Amino acid sequence: MGDVNRSLTLEGSEQGFATTRVDALLGWARKYSLFAYPFVTACCGMEYMALTSPRYDLARFGAEAPRFSPRQSDLLWVVGTISQRQAPVLKRIYEQMMEPKYVLAFGTCASSGGFYDNYTTVAGIDKVIPTDVYIPGCPPRPEAVMDGLMLLQDRIARNERRPGVVKPRLDPVAEAKALVQIRKSAKDPREVLPAIKTEEARSLIERGGGTK
Amino acid sequence: MSQIALDKLRERFGASILETHSAFGDDTAVVDPAAWKAVCTFLREDPALDFDMPVDLCGVDYPNRAAVGRMEVVMHLYSISQKHRIRLKARVGDEDMDGAEIDSVTSIWSGMNWLEREVFDMSGVRFRGHPDLRRILMYPEFEGHPLQRTYPADRTQPLVPYRTEDEAGMPLNKLEPFGYDEGMPFGRQGPHPRAEDN
Image (cartoon, rainbow over all chains, first blue to last red; front, side, top):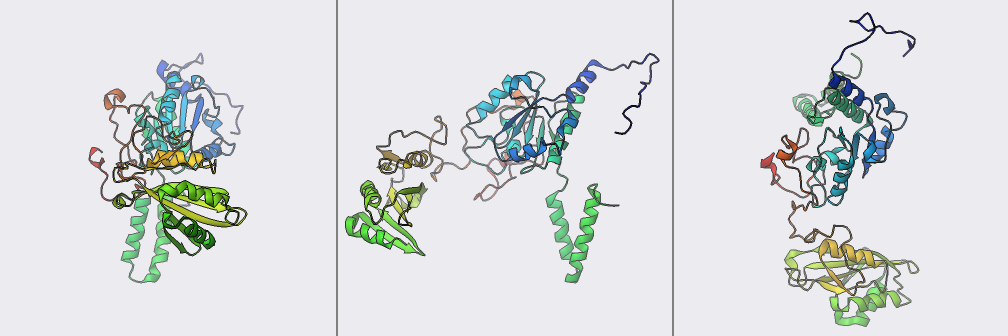
């Protein structure tokens, strides 16, 4: 921040212009002007509200403006469980959006149906509409959602429509296996707690947190 | 709590009260479905009982009890003035759910309207004399009644056809970490029947 008045000279040209490809320029422009249509159906909506609050400042990504008409929006946020009864509505909303359009599945239910493995729930919105980014979590933390948004921006900039998934920072299965291993290999029960603390510190550093 | 209600019911209806039991203050009467409406009217109108609040109505399916009536209609009542509760049960329907009919009590408690529609929708019990017996939770195109134990656990009835891989132009397998085995398939033992597709 600080140096707002710094002037920038573009390299490669004495006249001050830059060359690029049209699709790259379009991708760059699209990635910072995502007009959102929030399709909020369930409890993930609370986390969506937190996400759109000033604390997380979605304006940094150019994605803060909601449009409550699908005809004016580029990005469909599907936030929450989609029931079979609601699927036609979701599909219709999607079809009303203008190209290019992107879809973001917010939370485990929208991504895969979550634990609603039953007669009334669509097991993931990709059964009905194409989906660009999946964000697991029940609900996902706003940080995970911002990861997803940046993942989507990256895809848009590279003009790539392959779906992406936000990877959880913490793999609970690996973590549990490590803890079981510690418990098994300890000869003295008093060794267990210090060993767990060491493992937690190591895992935190591996995930990019804590102090090195 | 409402032993008085059970006593009064037995005295008044005799053989129509098939069994009663009380455990830890919960009083239950199993009622002959033919006497359902008469019993409810009595519970509502007797001043000492005065059950003025319909709390809940639901259907419980016992497929191996087809001899006495497979679907149990369970009603919970509360009296705001007398501060007591009672649970009524009636068993209807044979193993194919034929004859799963019972009188509607919407004329006694108008609040029972939607509850009876829910039991009809979920369990398939038909309420005689209900003013508007339609599905309330599922969509009209839905076939069958999902809370019957004979409804297949993995049967879905999509309103919009699911996308095919040709349409999508890409494989539609679930991406990591989403698989068929994620989440909590409650009460399901062994691998998911669709697991081999993944």
